[in-house]
Image 1 (cartoon, rainbow, N blue to C red):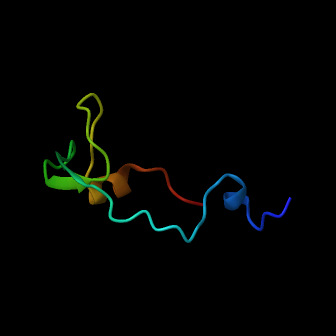
Image 2: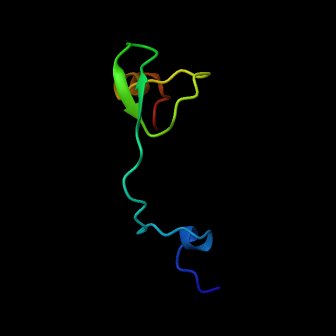
Image 3: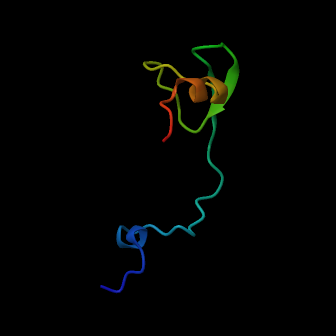
Length: 61
């Protein structure tokens, strides 16, 4: 096939630079702190700051 990596087969390159990510202001649903997230909050789901998200996410094995 001529592909050297799995990502390249799908049209992605690990070395690709997507540039700076657009950040959006939000208020954490747990602690009420203002934070920035890399997506535009729609209002129908809670948004968490980095610290609260780390407390809520499942443990990594």
